[in-house]
Length: 260
Image 1 (tube, rainbow, N blue to C red):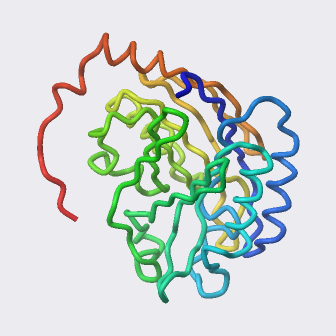
Image 2: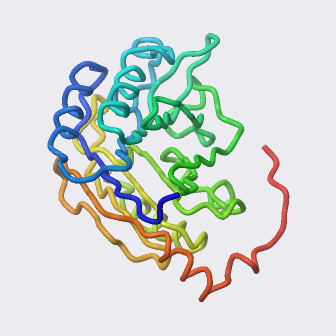
């Protein structure tokens, strides 16, 4: 068990449908990190961009990107996470992959597919929440649009971190900033949000705003300029436990049943 967690958020400009180039770029960023690392966090669909033609770029679970994640986790002795386009049983998933330093894989299939862009027409929705246990921390895994749905993020497992990887465009970035704070406050947890930068093939602009927010809704670290960036900080479990002791809001939450 570990009371501190050193996290590095890697905010990149994703090259459209170019798995090799994106992995090379992220590898260079990771190689620049010389301080302690417990967890690297990458954006949504970090190897391709937010593609609605998954048949062109989807990989299996033993494909190039997942294999690279396993190799990186083992060589850096550090967990790594981000979402990929995965094909499995003739279905396509926007899948968050979490690789432990040992190479063990856990994953979460995005529940809330972004119907505004037609994601629900080409990808299969996830049906199960995922709480990852890592070094004594409980991490709730989510992807982008999930952030808008507080019931799905509801902290019924006493998790410590709500983690959101995203391709969240500039036009709605104010919602991204506000909702990351809201999820932290209502769940008395840290929120980690990692977004991309740049302009994709659909002419959507992304300006980052990758950030870590504490249980009281205050930003610990935030990227405020639209450049490739590494946002690093240390999270302290004692801060969460103190806030939950001082403010017993989770004990007053309503009981209800979630139906898929």
